[in-house]
View 1 (cartoon, rainbow, N blue to C red):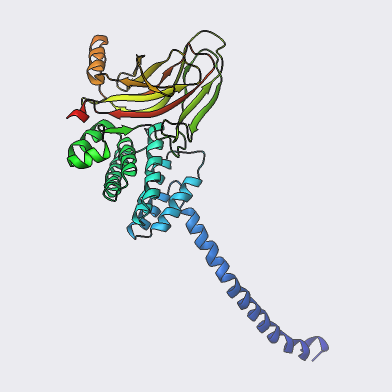
View 2 (view 1 turned 30 degrees about the vertical axis):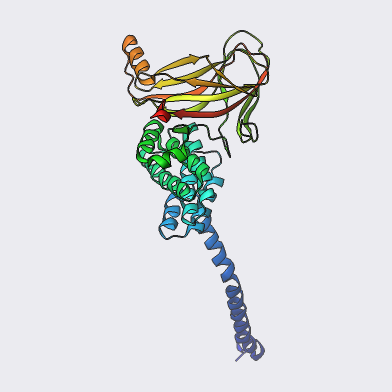
Length: 366
């Protein structure tokens, strides 16, 4: 046998041992990587559950299994992703509210229910009828829990947030007023039933914005004053600059109030840095007719401390039906979509807005 054909005993002896060492090293590295791989897979699964298209099913599954903290994490993750989109925010807040309530954290549940109401007011077209009914069912139970546990103000806020989230605040307010025991109703509303429409506390997006601005004013500020209300709590605030030309200056909040045949009225309080001529505007929209209507109210009552109360008592349903008949359009499906102020004649000014409410006229006397 030639030298080229002879096996080298040194090499043949080393290969098996080297193979064993490599196999052992591979096994050690694999075992070491398994926890990291498991962590990455779990993290990927957790993060994927935050996606705006999938978070709902994951959150509902966690709620069904009473995994409330996990449901909170999923809803929170959904709120932090897709920041350029807001169509899922209201639902994410609602599911997080249900998770907090399941865990017994009622104040946190209330805060998220209020956030749901805020989202579904400024973008009223996002929630489905089923989601609005879910918010109504949950919010009614939450308000009852808060009232029975002695948290009257929290219950009052929960009823307001529920009525707004339901998408039928007038009917909901009447139903609650009729269904509560007399002593409960008086505890909740000593001066008569109402819902707060503008939930400024913890507001994410609620702010006065230009509705019609033809005078070239600058909107200097629009947001929430955390201690500016009559009671020292949060209220809305907006500031406008000097006018540059003739025209209208209207500033408003978005609302979502289907016009009901049941009696209701609107009220709010306003304080100005520089007193001026102000009219309260109520904007209506009729989807079938593709028509808008604006009403003006100028009368106010002095509340002291620079505050004025604007009490808008109209038969909204009858007025709009009569105008529709006169102008020959269908008033079905009419909404109140804005409440705000005509400040066209004002100089540069700053305004504080408190207690934007819907209430049942004369109910306190019944």
